[in-house]
Length: 348
Image 1 (cartoon, rainbow, N blue to C red):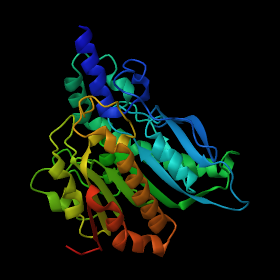
Image 2 (cartoon, helix red, strand yellow):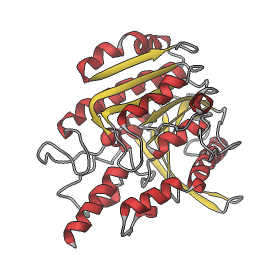
Image 3 (cartoon, rainbow, N blue to C red):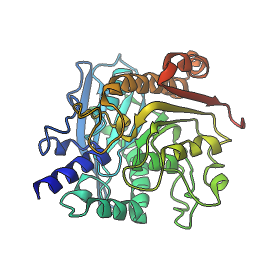
Image 4 (cartoon, one colour):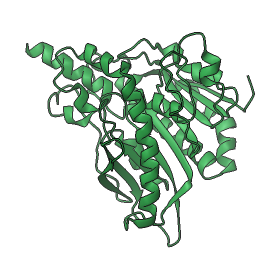
């Protein structure tokens, strides 16, 4: 019984990076520091969507000080299946330190609580992922969050007048990667299309991490209408810990978003959990439930931050030097740790 419990906890960590599991298996899974650096502050809260009778918890990472009259772009982050707004702290902290407001959401129904206590974790995970209501709720959560940020920018003393809501980006991992793609106009490519719900024009740039690939005969329809600049991120070992997506499939969005300016990084030896920020002790060179050597994580994390910095600066701050770096410089810095592709809109 004890052995079975440990394997479930380990798999939960693989799926989510949820920090609440740290105490359950400290010898297997440890989280990175969750305190913000000295130049970053955080705000935790909960928005209540009265129309849906639904709560949307959030955590906002902000630069601690801003010059008077300064406004900063906004990044909305959507967690993976089984996660929460408390995860992916290394991204929120870093982006805020670089002059962004990083807004992390909790999506009830596909968050940590949705898997807690499950006797058959794989069955529970599949049920959550395949429940169309969770996909729809996630998309509506993001648009609702953007509405609430608009209100906060007018009325909330902590952020009043600080947010540049004309410059909004979105990122997400796993289920959050799908949510990100839907928010920029991806159709599902299947009969379960969430027609009329996705595609929020307020989002000007997107970074889907380990996004599942659309399947079926309508791949061009699924991705063909997307025009938002996109940076897709994956790894050569990025097989889904729950689902059918194989690592090689994860380049499909990049290959089929022909109307968008787009980039793709594939980390050599990077697995599904590279993007979560979680690290595990060396155990025969492997992490529980994953494939990659955890000793490579610091290098991958540095490259994730380096490339996302340039992408946000290029497309949310209008920095042409950053765009040139994306097209011409990052592949050099990536070296043998991965492959990099960059394509302009309508370039096949």
